[in-house]
Image (cartoon, rainbow, N blue to C red; front, side, top):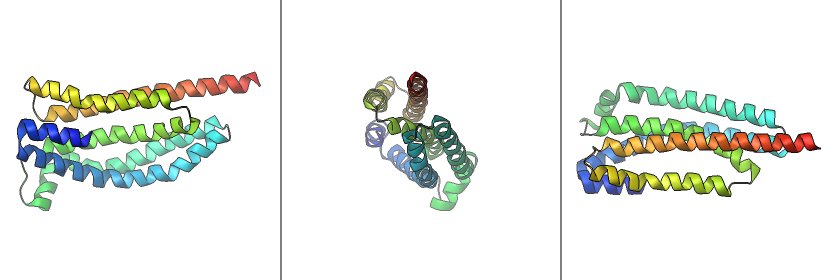
Length: 193
């Protein structure tokens, strides 16, 4: 998705916007990398809880992973959200055009994607992922043609990242609905025993 986004931005806005997109992706990757380590620490416990049919512990692990990784991600992202210009000026000496809004939107997309990653771990623990993977994968891929269409209508470069943020929010809501449905299925099976 990121490569398609960069391709669209380069074609519609040129090298300056594409550079800004690359800087935003770099900042976002560094900030998200730290939060990903927290998610990695929770992943085995989430899967183990599901395997032991301990839904309450699994839900607690998912909630804790979301809390801790979001807290840590926000501790790193908030300075960039509020002082983007100052930090980029320290780093690069000059703030390129488009960098500030693209960094902010990319960090917001990553905060939502962080939650999605954790919920996805719970879904993957069930082993029944075909339908949800198809739906979420399709939504990830649809961001490119939707962005293309909006750019053809004359929207600005930030629109591409707004589409990504909205796509991530929609995917989180789908995954939340899916994991709750799996919880209900699991509870029915346990009650039937």
